[in-house]
Image (tube, rainbow, N blue to C red; front, side, top):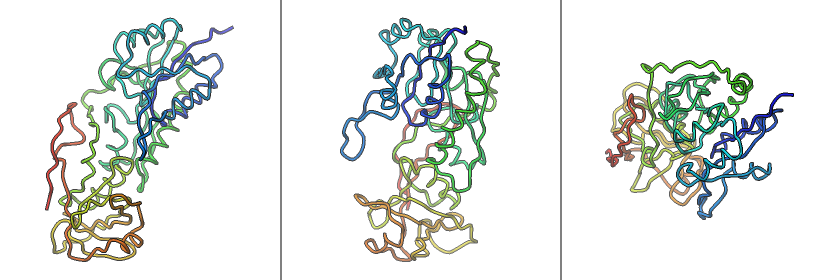
Length: 339
């Protein structure tokens, strides 16, 4: 009779649920417990809420551990007492110390939503959309101390559709984890996984997004701004100012037209189908808008309560800090308004 292997899963995002559900049903694999972030305030009322991972674990009757900043001595002792063999990690939100990584005889393995070595760091799906990539994927990798730098076990590619948003791409990434682990679980549990070192020449990092990263810079092309709207649709959302009011953009299209007279950000068209804003190249047509305290509305409805006229100039902003870099960077800068 095969020996039962004991595992923990570490995750804090709904992205992890499909692979967790799959692992829960694997014969000969036993869930010892789930690690996730502490309960946080969420929603308009900022009431403290459990995240989806904790809710699922409690429904399954599994122990839940919620270390505040990192897994400490108490949690490490629990792992040893529970004789945990292996750990799977996805969107946990905490770095693991070497002592924790060493506690699992069969290793700790991370699902990272990019084709490593591309987009190490916290926002790889957004980065793929921002840069106009045609495809991305999920990488199953060995966890080491350096962020997202472990050896690769396998990848599951996935296409990026023309109208893809971060939300839709997250769903694809969550689902892609299942065939990935189906192919490799046997080898991982047997300690026989074949590993491939990452090509360091191809490494790039994506930093954590800040709220002001949503500011649209109309000195960029309409195509780049349309990608920004889709990439940041989940958070922080794309925005610009018009008449002293910050307006959030819910949907946009781009028209790569020839040169037109006017200033970057100038309104060149207003109608029920959209509001056209001039960019460095082409026109960005806004399809849905939201004002502070209001709901996201189609432009045809939004204009009834917030008139916009041709000739007005929207004010954008630029973070002036690259999203993707060759070296991991943490610098934060103050956004500068753009006329």
